[in-house]
Image (cartoon, rainbow, N blue to C red; front, side, top):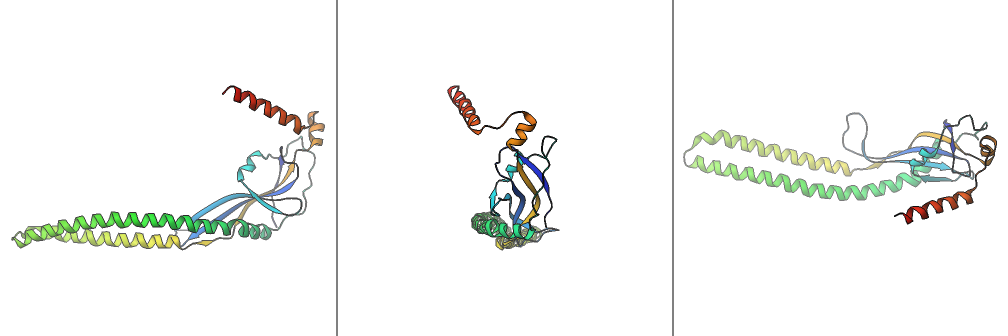
Length: 225
């Protein structure tokens, strides 16, 4: 079962559970310690009063605040199962993320392969031309260039090895698999109700008045360019 905190929302009308979820796609590149992450999403998953899950931006947490003295005692409902959140997140977030990641990584790898092939081929061909020029000098009796020929050949072999290594590594990047989402934290979010406004601020929230005030402010800003 998940344990979390209680947060206050100044804008929401209904209470809900909020979960900070990390969803990752990994590839088969070897890592020193952790998995090789190909794609990562951080999202806010929330469960409404009917038990339905929804997803939104984690930036939503910026508008939520810890309870202070002005809030009345809050008794959260029963805790939510971690497995339930993980399963919903996998079905509704990770699976689509996996398909999207395959598409954009495939395109990226195609471009990278073209670049690697072009770059390595040009350098190797230049070295081979230089090697042939040195070998021509040997035919004319210049034996002093043998060491240079040997070094050119070593460099060509080294570049071919690097090229193959880089291409093999690109293939590992395309071997993707989704990880089970991880719930990093959770909160029971409570709206700052009219009762709390009336009892502690001596005023009540008026959505209609707020909408009129916002429109008036926007009209003024537009008139000022």
